[in-house]
Length: 146
Image (tube, rainbow, N blue to C red; front, side):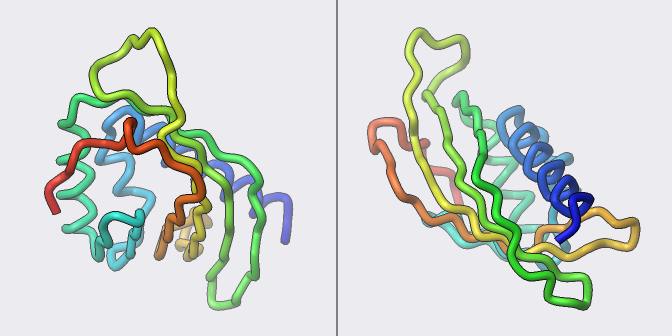
């Protein structure tokens, strides 16, 4: 794997975390392919319409999150413009608006991703599967309509 590809995956992760934490649904949607699948362990979403509706509902919840990631491991470059990656994500969360006096780890999870390299060289997420490793039910998000 090239360092350039690694930087592209890192940039995609950073854009995802920022957009998710700041309710930027339009920004999130630019990161997904039209037929993407997103499985966060609680809900499985397929396609741009389901993703947009779910992220829009999430963005209206009064919740503060910050997602950070580490341990990026690039998998195979499968040819035909497909790349796989695995990383570890930590979500700090609190239900309610910021600022908060305490911080808690809501979830530590493995993210297994499959990206397609787009026509401009950027990545489009085709599949994300999130597998929780550690979680704190007291910090779980409120239910988001599916």
